[in-house]
Length: 318
Image (cartoon, rainbow, N blue to C red):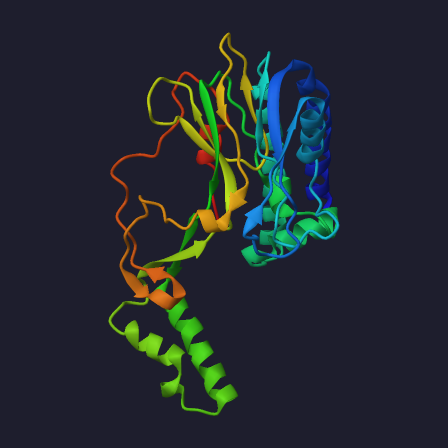
């Protein structure tokens, strides 16, 4: 039953092993920051970023590229992150593309089995763990490596402290959830359904059709990101989640790097200035009417720099 997943994973392991033997020989410079593993599904107020350079950075990256299992004490639902960058004498773009494609093959094999078994999308991690091992981490396994066949003039590492993820949910599904919640509370508290908070929220939706689609907003835990400038423009050309080091190629002028600092929640209270304004439907559940599409496209790396960035941006999402 799990042979296809296991076969795709074996091919991924082979490619990663070959990559780890090759890329360190091309390193000109590089720095990574080792972040503490989380022991609970909550980001602490302060995260110390340990700076590694030279051989220590290379060794840490080689381990991180093949680290797909949760470490001892690492909380389920959290990921190991190693933000950083390496400047290489030769491009490794094709090798990285191959690895990312093999990661997608693993994901496709998991999805194929899920559909064959007629399971819900949330079953994907369970199928992956049954095929590969109980401690395997889906995000660490499937996340792509970022590589640019170009030389940035500036790389900036920052913390994304107020990022939100958005999803879509029908009003019919929201009504179903609220109705079940109202009935459960009424039974538990021995009260009338009409007196429950869930029922009052149901009344708020009375004039909205079941087929209407709402935006569901969820907070994303603080995470490091990297912005890269290739042109002389003041606007960055690429912004990636810094889960793993970014690979770029060397030029006569080394890139200027603004390094990652420690994360301090108390120093990051300001919300993003460009956060979209949305009309609340159920504020306590972070449900909103869909916002208008942005008139201006998101920044993208300049067309003459081949990279994995555009490819990652166009991957289908759940």
